[in-house]
Length: 164
Image 1 (cartoon, rainbow, N blue to C red):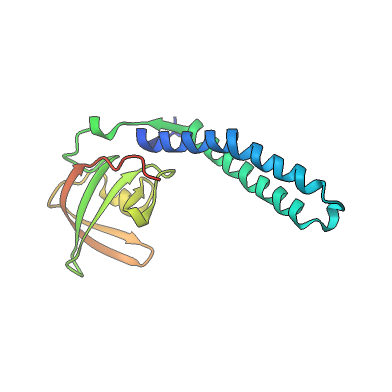
Image 2: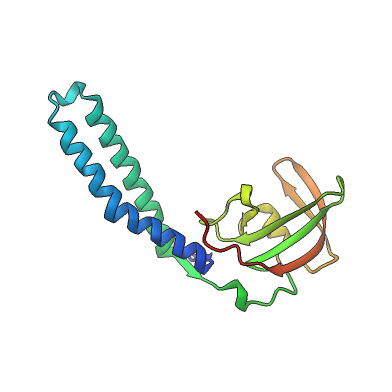
């Protein structure tokens, strides 16, 4: 099971919904665009045709990626896990010991990660440094911008839900 990737139920639902939309709506619409553009004449110099073909290519790559995520998904409901220690699905409030600022991150699977929303992948350097730690522990994390030291202020489960 080394190729399995943890994913929350809401993250899995979001990916499945996008995959269904791409396969059942976007594919047909893009195929129709190609068909209409092909009727405009010489395909070698038909910008609309080439744009529609490129759009279909991007769509197919996204479908393949989402299918890969779904096939590797190991859906885990973090609400059922204990969060005394940092684990998958934990929302961790940290105190940056250098700047004295608090930051908060939720540990999710790579398909769900979105640093701008505070969702970090289980494989990220910070998540790897945090997993297994408890409130009050100091954590050294080797991040892209250097080594940072944090103190764990709180650990909880917070449902971030399916968001657009």
